[in-house]
Amino acid sequence: MRIEKNYSLLKHNTFGIDAKCHRFVEYETVEEAQRVTEMLAADEPLLIVGEGSNLLLTGDFQGTVVHSAIKGIESALTANGDILLKAGSGETWDDVVACCVENGWQGAENLSLIPGEVGASAVQNIGAYGAEVKDLITEVEAVEIATGRISTFSRESCAYGYRDSKFKHEWKNHYLITHVTYRLRTVGAPLNVAYGNIQAELDKRGIAEPTLKQLREVIIAIRREKLPDPKVEGNAGSFFMNPVVDREVFESLQHQYPDMPHYNIDEAHEKVPAGWLIDQCGWKGRTVGRAGVHAKQALVLVNRGGATGEEIVQLCNAICQDVKSKFGILISPEVNII
Ligand SMILES: Cc1cc2nc3c(=O)[nH]c(=O)nc-3n(C[C@H](O)[C@H](O)[C@H](O)COP(=O)(O)OP(=O)(O)OC[C@H]3O[C@@H](n4cnc5c(N)ncnc54)[C@H](O)[C@@H]3O)c2cc1C
Image (tube, rainbow, N blue to C red; front, side, top):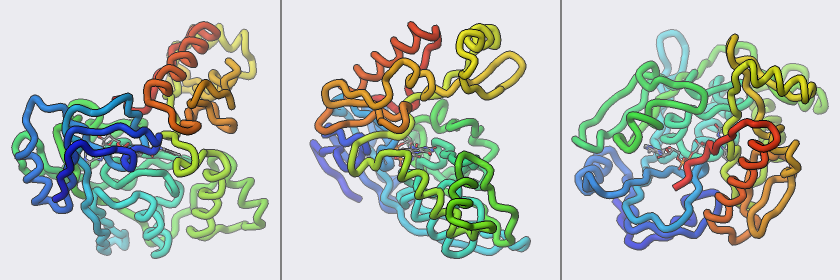
């Protein structure tokens, strides 16, 4: 187990914010995770981090930050020919995807290059290009912080929704995730190429029937083209959630903005892309001090170099205000602001 005092979190957040925490604790095994739970006082501020790719630190953290360094990827073939893959919560998510693709195990390829670790994949229900990790997860193993007991949760008990799970609400700060098990297919079902510009990119490369490897390469290329690399320009991916609006509000806006993109949720609600709203307010590509809005995707806020978390929050607030004044819609951050 690793324990550090007055520790810089620079390596643990992709926004590149140089904030410190009072204490940093890292567990490498389930037993160490159990020992960590004994060290945590009930009234002490707690922050569990993975790679910090969905995190914005606005200052030093006056409490304990806990990180999993549990490694290992084990696979087992089931009777029906599927693969059950159990990964340590400290594994890098994209290494898991690479392992699946290399072995011809299907299901994770559309989730290629999403930053972050295995533990967070099960918290966030990561998704991209028409796929969500909840459709692969079979169970999540964790240590309960209050008791040190090992718990195993089925996919159903995690109540997965769009980028959502019980780990973000009633189970928040209640469990240290240790392992996640995913189910992959070995027998090829049709690959999911319908989403976004995957098909266009495959056509451009003259690929009619992509292999898993080719599909992964195409997705990686599209993502590299569209999104800033946190190692070059600090960011946390999509900063805002796409707002869901009442039909009445939506229809009145659609009258004013006939080109407004939208996705039906149900009879009473419609989802509007926050990136489009922000772009319409003229924010795409703008810079305010050391913070800015990515030039290719208005949903992504970036650290242009040396920005503080507060500067990013100020930019976020200015954008939210402009969207509210222009469209009457309240957008809110998806990123954890601490
Ligand atoms: C460039 C970029 C692109 C992105 N693209 C996508 C995308 O396409 N799709 C998508 O869904 N997301 C995307 N994201 C967001 C981010 O990658 C995901 O949310 C990811 O799952 C976060 O992983 P992390 O390890 O960094 O977790 P963190 O940000 O550190 O934590 C996320 C949450 O998980 C909890 N957590 C982490 N580890 C544990 C653990 N061991 N036990 C208990 N709780 C834990 C934390 O407390 C927190 O609530 C993107 C981010 C960036 C920077």
